[in-house]
Image 1 (cartoon, rainbow, N blue to C red):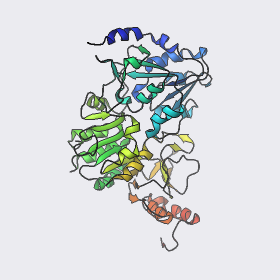
Image 2: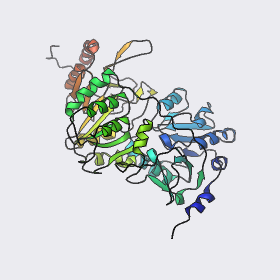
Image 3: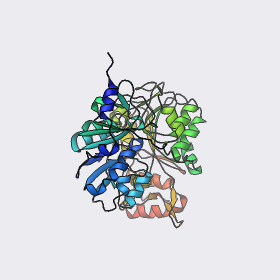
Image 4: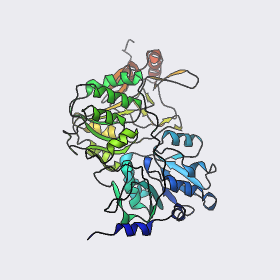
Length: 446
């Protein structure tokens, strides 16, 4: 006997206007993450602005536009929040149209299960299969726990969503859906390819010697991971694995070079594990219906107790600045929200506990402000910047001037090591500041 899912589908199919009519003033709405943004529902909900007050919306790593945020500068009708800011959401924060939610990704499911209200979840999904399932695609990392806790679940069928295979919670069944909406969608905006800089390549060259055959990688997003992917592809390394919160084009480069096989992983052998994906059209084509990769919720991907089970687990993330105590600021510049904690702390803890594991924090030694003035990313002490990773958890720190290991190091050793990888133009000033703070060893003759 075959269930008649088509009949149930037709019964639950409504217009976007009827779907958003369930939203009431004061409700908490969830848009889930990245490609899961419900484009048509967002547009329709924004049109109800004058009918609604104090509707709170949560999202994560979303491209623009987010209509409910842009249509109401007063925040009286809609208030938008992000778990991790994309470049677009960062601009909304600058305008007072987005509020960041502090978090660590491995607790994403627990936040919803124990602490948060979700009155309506709106999420884009791939078209239903013959068994009645809608695929969350590259939104698998966060979607299912949110839909489970929602009073009302509305799925927006997006014909462009690539179907991905998963470990668990990569789909939602039609029986768990309250309303379905359809409509034509524009192709996804994949953005420009991130081109590595010479400094990115120099940092990557310093990391390569620390990698071994069979290592499993977690890479953040940006030009440095892409540079590392290119260098590893040209190296002699083999049988690498993928266990990463974010799957980017760096992993596609590794796969094409034959380096990414996942053959020797302790867990999920033969599978490249990820939670979400951001990258090129080629990346999504690779992930689509690929039995060699598996999408999992971030409660699994980012759980330190899971990560530490993988031998030779290597975590590589970037940051904005490090102070001479070893504290890492990776999400804000002063009080300005740039991105989010994401999975940096999860992977620092997990990779550090892995047999043969290593965790790298990478950054260029300097940056230029809008006026063209040069500043050091290694600073004496933070004043207002949000600390993403505490000094007690930081392992390797890397700039184009070298790699240092802060595990078990005292305050004077940390200061000395961090000065050694700072830009030469700033080292003397950093030493003077360390002396003022009594963390520069008196016998050091420098």
